[in-house]
Image (cartoon, rainbow, N blue to C red; front, side, top):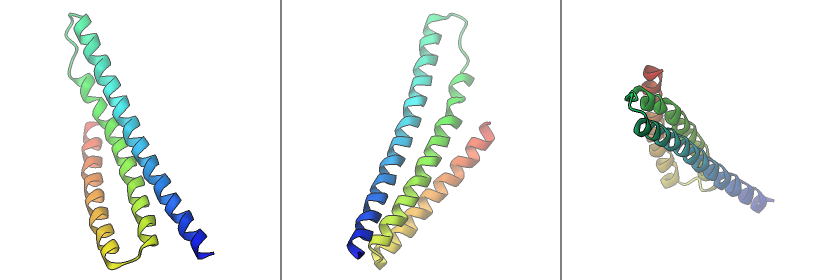
Length: 114
């Protein structure tokens, strides 16, 4: 029974980590598509596209980054449940603190840009 629980937690952790990578990649792809579309339009129109169109992409990409970071934190918590040793707990605390700090300041920047 204990083995099944460990396998389930490991698969959940891996699945959530994969999901967070997908979220980050989708945000990157949408941001890159918006940027390329903006540049394409700027090359073919002589009206001079404004840089505000590109800066409007930042909050959208930032929201994907925040969501991906949140998913990574959940994945780290599940992984630590599998190996609750001091090294893992300290690592989780440091990584969680870093990701939370990045998320906090990124969220503030997104709120200012909206």
